[in-house]
Amino acid sequence: MAKAGQQKDTADAAPITVHVNSRSKNAPLKYPSNYISTTRYTLITFLPKNLAEQFRKASNCFFLLNMVIALIPGVSPVFPATTIMPLVVVLAVAALRDAYEDFCRYQSDRRANSAAVDVIPEGGTANVVSKVSMDIRAGDILYLKKGAEIPADCVIIGTSDENGACYVETANLDGETNLKNKEAKLPLQRKYNSVASIAQLTGSVKCDAPNNSLNKWQGVVTAPGCGDLPVTLANLLLRGCIVRRVDWVIACAVYTGVNTKLFLNLTQKPPKVSRLDTKLNRLISIILGFQQLLILLICSMSAAYASSD
Image 1 (cartoon, rainbow, N blue to C red):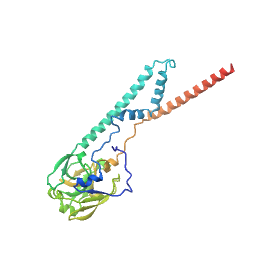
Image 2: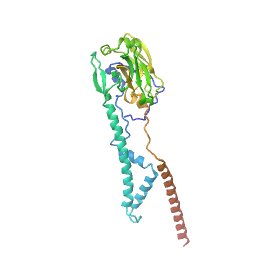
Image 3: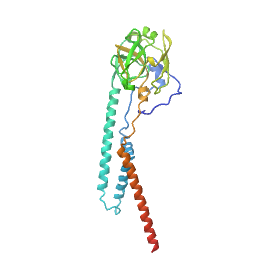
Image 4: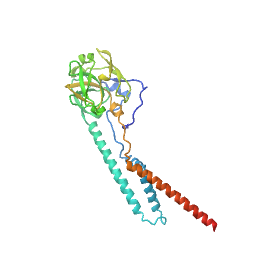
């Protein structure tokens, strides 16, 4: 399963073709579902992965070495529990903190994947049905109401505005609170501007392969009665944006799940390393090196003394 931060290098990839309102035609193309996951761990990988991250700290490695030495009978005068327990407590507290943070990410993913989305189903019916976000597929026709968060990257087909205009809030993408103007192509707006007309829509969208660029995008929409219509970023709604100032927008999903620009721009945060940890790593490395020099020096002096006798 793809994770956040695993970005695709598709600058030279061939364009993709998404068939509008036809899951049977899109199935052989194997586009991903709209399911996303931003967690760092799973139940299986948590323990080994978290321990590997914990032992990147020189202090943990140092005390682990001391613990191993303390467990050797006759080598250390220290009771083993006095070196084992502090290390175990430190590792356990750090692991619980990481587990809690990852559980919060899991809860956020779960809310996003289970959010309700209105979809106009294929088959010529003029009904709007509700689906959960993770069940959306490329080519599905979405019915987005004012204030709704857009669940996938999609091309606008029609809006409640007679000129096909709509506005979106992009704060989740770029942090800007100013509304962005988007629009439907006029031939599509005039022919497919209601649920009843959209239910009969067929055709395709040929566009750029999934990539993380937020500044450029292009494609061609082919629809009966409209011919081939070039589309750009002005006609594309991105996942995470919110519909504003229009009652509804009808759009065709082209990128879903791990292919959306929002997901491709997510970067997984590296493990937290404070300045104190960095300083401790340096000091403990110096102490460990100094100890090894002392051991080497004492062993050399002992060998020299023994040979002199």
